Image 1: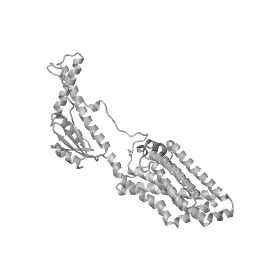
Image 2: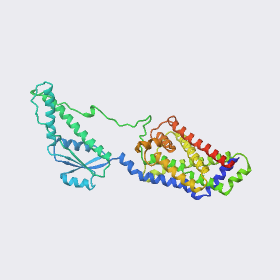
Image 3: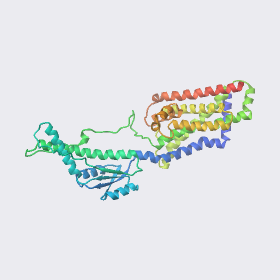
Image 4: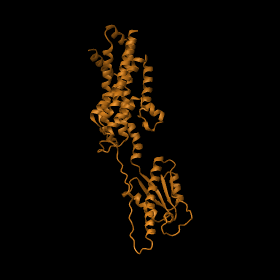
Length: 422
């Protein structure tokens, strides 16, 4: 009965505390929406790269035509033809365009000549009959790519890699043509051997996982909804610690001690009530991710294994409630409890990958992040929502969350009992 009475008492205290209700439900709701909207553009930048690139074709030959044809099939890069390299430099420098490709005059002819020279040297060293190779060492063809100083480095790498691949394919075809031409020199007729690099090696992009039929990718909704939901669940420390310390200061705890009996049911009742509140927060945030986010022009939250999601939510709720209870019983004033609680939750969330992904942190912080309960929870949600694993795969993180929460509950009971006795 003490457990139920404590549960009901906490319920009455909460519904009478408008500020506490706002912190528990409205604050995380606003936070999730704002963070998802703010981070939507950066997530889309990586997934939907679209660049307008100036193309100055001073060569007007095979290399320029091949480059134009290849990028014409791309959904991420659009070539804008210009004739003046100085003007192109100015347009890129002032940010009007993000990049410019400048193909020098006679680039195709120079590359063909270098190809003939290379094949002649190879055949000559092999002892095959061929014309004496030219001994002049010709310089490499200088293709220039100008970049806006503000462009991201990954865009530079993507565009440079694409241009290099196109020219490498052209050169490979010319090597084969020149080799065939020199080997069949003197014959009246010979057929040209067609070459398609994609028929030699084909790189296929796939997401690793057991079930990839949905094609879900990381986006601002998939990251922010579970991340900031856990942040909100750990902020349960505010109403929990506030009410607990208020009862102690007003003498409610003293009256319970005078009644006699164990204080364990009181602690369990508080724990169960705020555990329920954490689950209510989780359900609210999931509904926001599914129904509200699409109305704001964002992606809808895609869920994973249902059982795993419920187990993870319960484990995070236990860890968050246990942590809040320890802070409530340890500190003697609301100012101490709320100051330490808020700062510590922010630190744990930063280390746990709520603010930025763990893999971009320095190596030392990556090691420290392994001890953050928010990292355990976020990794479990990522496994469920994005990697589509079963509950079996997340059991190690679930076990750590349960151990953390139950250990915190036990510690809070011991601290509370020691202060009651004294």
